[in-house]
Structure formats: C-alpha cells, structure tokens
Length: 391
Image (cartoon, rainbow, N blue to C red):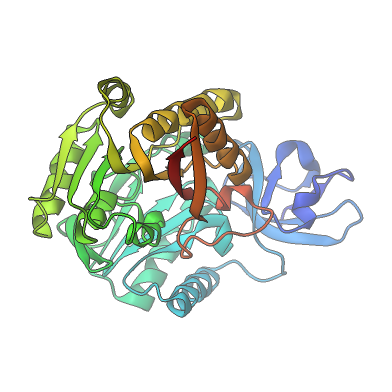
C-alpha cells in the first residue's frame, strides 16, 4: 500500500481527528498514486496516523476513513452505514433522516438522506465514488429500500475530476414522493428538488415555532417548498404568507398547503424577498412573526464580507416589519459564518433597526446531522428566534 508521510509541522486538527489532509501538509508519497486508491498515512515520527483515500487532482490530497489499520472493503462500508443507522434510531430518527453526514459519520464526502423507504445519495469525492457499488449494496442489505437515487449533479465533483450526474441506483421508481414530518405531509421531488430534494436539517427547528405563531399574522421569506409556513398554519397562525423567487418552489409550496388542508390560511407567492421586504417596510406593513430562511450567501472565504452584509440587510428589513413584541425567526446555513458571528450580525441589524432583542431559542441543525467538535463544516446551521421590541 502506498505510504504518505506528513510534514513535521502540520495543523493540529489532523492529530485531533479531522480527516482532511491537504497536499501542502504532505512530505513524502512513497508508492503509486491513482485517484481513489486507499493509502496509509504516517506522522513525521513514523507513528501511524490513519488510512484513507487519495486524489492527486484534489486540494484535499487524502481524506481519512479510519485511524485504525483495518481493511477498507465492502464489509467496512456495511459496518459504517449500520452504525450510523443505529445511532439515528437511538435519537428517534426512524422515518426521515440524514443517514450519513460525511465527516461526522467517518465517511468523508458522502451524503445519504433517508426519506422513509427511499434513499438519496451524493458522493462528492473520487475516493468515495469508487465505493459507490459497495455503499448501494449495503443500503440494500440493511434496508431493502423501495428505491435509491443519486443526486451527483453538484459542481464540487468537478474539482475531484468527476462528472456531474443523477439517476437511479436501483430499479426506477416515481421520484415524486410524500413524506410525513411533525404530523404534516410534504411532497418531495427527489429528482429535481434542491440538494437531495428536501431540507431535513430544519425538521426539529420547525417544531420550535409552535407557540409563537398561535393566532399570529406570519410572513415567511425564502420559503422554498413552504415547510416552515405550513407548520405555522398547522400550529394555529391566523394568516401566513410565504415568498420565494422560484415559481416552481411556490407551486410546490401551494400543493403542500393543499395536501394538509391549510390552503385557506397559508398562501405562497413568487417574489424577490430582498426587494419586496424593502418596499413593504416603506409601506408600513407589520406582522406578528417574520421568518427568514435564506440560502447560503457564500461558499468561499473571499466573499465572506458580502455574506455578512447580505444577512445583516435581510434581517434588518425583517425586524422593521415586526409589530412591537413580535418575533423574528431567522436562519443561516453558511458554514463560514460561525455561530458567534451570526449573532453579531443579528445584533448589528437590531442596532440599525433601533430594536431591542430577547433570545427565545438558538440552536443548530437537527441531531441526525451530528456536530463533531473541531470540524467546522459539521456545525453549519444557525437557527434563532428572538422577541423584537421597540427601543
């Protein structure tokens, strides 16, 4: 097996358990190097570091799969997936969950979402793509699923020398399915929806709005397929309006409202939230609850300032639309904006809006997306509810 020896001065994160090894942290590669090969990694003092897959085309030269000298084979992937499933079951995620959350489940660059009896897979690095047949085999053995679909239509694969693709990894099936969440039903478009078709990471947070929306007039922006807004209607809101720039998302959101018999309470409209909220502030519109769930504003550190400005501006506009004593529900899925920074941004927005805030809830993604300390990319979602009052 090819041996990779690290430089003496490496980032402490490797020794502390992070699986990524960048090319500039490697001193010697002894042996042949083909993309996807399993290699052994050693520290400069010849102590064993771990075993993982290599890709000379990637900035992340090696991603470690294990810190033990164990064989990487079909059984290895079967065991890892079974362990991940047992962990979710212990936490109560049995119907819909993120079954594999990449590095947090010691399977770097692999995402698997479970929608009841259907599975959606993303393999985002060459080394995990090689093992896709073994992963599919393990899913079939453990779950006997009704269908498996790959959503590898993501640009990051091209950085690994992989093509973008999507399609069936099982017998074909109807990719438009219905799932249950918190006593509600939602259409999920596995083939054409965003990411893997549905955002499971907010499933616990959607329950957190239960009490603040009762008898409230609610505005939701960046609604996608309307899950937060439909929860608000279900939890007793007087009226709910959801906005999204995508006509397709709005059409699906309205279908979801009808699916739950809530179409008389919640409506969705295709609008650019940034522009509309600015106009409505000037018009003096007011709501009891404003909910903001924007997409990631940046994926690169170079644009971090732009993201900060974007989050501040949208939250500022949201606060100005809230009645005195109402609530702001706001999220950020940009992992480069860490929790402390996110709270600072909200505080800056409140100062500019001349509002006083009282924190109700501040939490992360649902626990089927586990956070591993020291791995920033596993701690990406910030979910905040604050009471907003005039100064």
